[in-house]
Structure formats: structure tokens, C-alpha cells
Image (cartoon, rainbow over the protein chains, first blue to last red):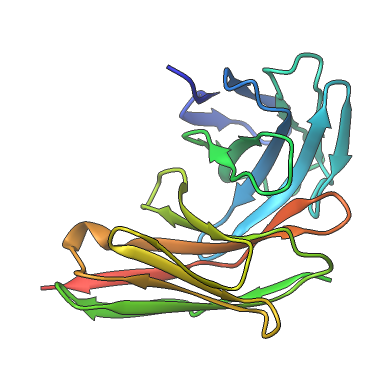
Length: 113
Length: 110
């Protein structure tokens, strides 16, 4: 059963701690993305990767870091430098090529106390 | 820059038809996508348009006019479960990224 998994669903951390959000896909998709969603706002792109060992910053990359060592995996680290980390984080993937839609994981709701 | 506009909220009656508009200004265009998102859940893909015209998928249809930078999502025979946020997204830009609007929150009332 193909899809995208994100874990955990809910995550609580103390201020000042780094935290890593997991994203795994078994769809054999080339491109993977991380978005942040805040109440009343659309999805804002944090980072994306179109190929293994390569990634690009999105619109709000400050305070975040990623890696893409395997095609299936694209973990996101929320560092202590991110000023307002509490949000809903969504991972997505898509096949290479222009007209393919994105598939989303179930999301991780991060709360920093 | 990229700009995607859609209304913030809409209300419609069960069994009726509703049209959700989306206007966009982007550098490059490789398709317009509509997603449905229920509260606390991930967006799910509804439809996409690459060429001008209407695409129909059951109770959902989507229209695109590239010259006007305009699209709409049409929902027919509304059901209570259609209450959700509807996201308009355009693919384009230098990285062939997806740019999302803020979403339209649709409430279906009996």
C-alpha cells in the first residue's frame, strides 16, 4: 500500500530544543517537499528536493534544515533558531514531470512549550 | 512574485451548487491544482487544469482561463461532508514549485 508517512502525529518540545520530523514515501517519487501551515493561512514552502543529495530553500527556510540521503526519506529539523515553531507540518511528494499532483502525508502537529 | 487569491469563507446549502474562484499571478505556469482539506488533516487532490476549459470529475468540476489567470472549482449536489477548506495551487516558478492560496473555508448548512 503506497503512501507517505509522517511521524509522530503530535509532538511536544521545550523551547530551545531541536526536533526532527520524519517523512517517508514508498511511491518512488522523485521530488519531496516540506510545508508549514498556520491557522487561517495557506501552505508555505520550507524546503524541497527534486533529487537525492540535493535540496533548495523555499519561502520560509530560516530556522529549518533538511537532508535527502535516500530517495524515500526527507527529514526536517526544526532548530532552536526558528522563532515560532508551533505549527502543522506537512510533507508531500510528486513524480518528476510537470503535470503531476502532490501527495501529502498526514502531517505532524508540533507544539513548542 | 507569486500571488494566489481566493475568498476566505463561503457558505452554501446542502444540495445546492457552489463556485469557488481563484485568481493567480505567477512566473511560469505548469498547471493549476485544487485540493480539499478537512480540519486537522492533510490536503487531498481533487483536480487539475493545464489547458483552458472545464474538467469534470463527478460532482466536482474545475475551469481554467490562462489568459485571465483565473480558475474556479464547482461543487454540485452539495453534501454536509463537503464542508472543508479548498486550496488552489499553481505549479510554476524556477523550481517548478507549487504555490498555494490561503484556502477557502466552505460551510455547508442544512
